[in-house]
Length: 477
Ligand SMILES: Cc1cc2nc3c(=O)[nH]c(=O)nc-3n(C[C@H](O)[C@H](O)[C@H](O)COP(=O)(O)OP(=O)(O)OC[C@H]3O[C@@H](n4cnc5c(N)ncnc54)[C@H](O)[C@@H]3O)c2cc1C
Image 1 (cartoon, helix red, strand yellow):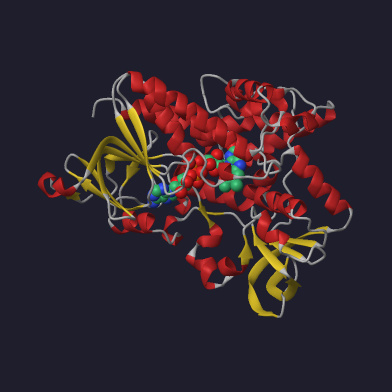
Image 2 (cartoon, protein in one colour):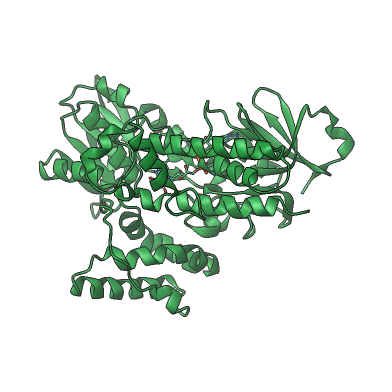
């Protein structure tokens, strides 16, 4: 990995112990954990958004865009599973979120709006800042995009979008997820320009309420898009197209189930996993127990199973198990699922197994997309007044059109992770360069580590990684 000698680095204007690149949930939680540890340190979080702790997910403003797990599952504190429940209890008691009484369940079973969850994260950050200040530690938000990163002999140097430069002893890539819609591939087909933002209710209010809306993708972003359309007063047909035509299941609160993977370490391959899981689900159903009970025991083992697997096994998982895993594991919050089920039942929302092939030139107020339905040899064109792209995330950094991923790849400071999902890193998050060397000062957490752990995105993944990485960064070099 190329390093710039120390003396060339004197033009850096600001300096900190730790530079966190990205101030979404990952960046904010890492800052919290760093502030909680003993010792004195300075942290700069570089984030173009106005607020830390939100990112795309928790900048949501609609109450209907909720977490996909209930409060008891979404603590950001790995040492206190009740942390969000306690915060929500106090928040509701103080008059916040009055609509929560519509769910008539205990606070731990509420599915909070994601915007409110962002407020919780911000409050935990503010509290940690006060506690850290007592030790002389500080966290500051630098509002810009990082466009380049260089290794120095004794640290790293960042270049920001406003030309500013920062130096740090360590840098952490907490850059989150890059939406598929903003990739060059999608852009070249015009999809990016033609599609509505799934969360932009104001833009949806401009549509003719009786018109047909087309949605590509049928996962949780589609569910959010349907909530947005409903909120915007849309009452026309919604046509959803996705490769497998699978809808996310609804999240329930299943009882505990034996940890069969923990008890039997011989289960390692995707085939063994699916066979055993099916057996346990059948067993549960036969005993009148929700199939979600055995499924929910699998989650904690996924990072281990994925990191132990060969590339061939990982490919088999992605090819054969992934669609099923996504629809069964990444489940829908109950109120959103109810809405989708109602519209489906009324025939207003249709889901078709079809692949998106491209955009047709638009005519008048309508646009057309070319699709190929599953099992059919020919493509056909379907029309609507609007298109929403909810086809997911671009994990392959080589296809992400942002300056920092491009520069890091061009400088050889990162290499693609397994199956080109995110970037390669060690178990403790140290980034691996193109030459195979492990960086001593550059780390990553959260979605960029998708290829290392498969599940590296959810609130609980990020919270655990933040705690472990904070410890690692505060150890002597
Ligand atoms: C719409 C949506 C809903 C979700 N809902 C749930 C849920 O209900 N439950 C759950 O467990 N998980 C959910 N997730 C997963 C969620 O992404 C993670 O929980 C979490 O947001 C990941 O945090 P992050 O900080 O790593 O990434 P992000 O939230 O994506 O934040 C990354 C930040 O980095 C910044 N950034 C990127 N590049 C640079 C750069 N070069 N310089 C400076 N800043 C940069 C971006 O501006 C962004 O703010 C959801 C995700 C999305 C997108």
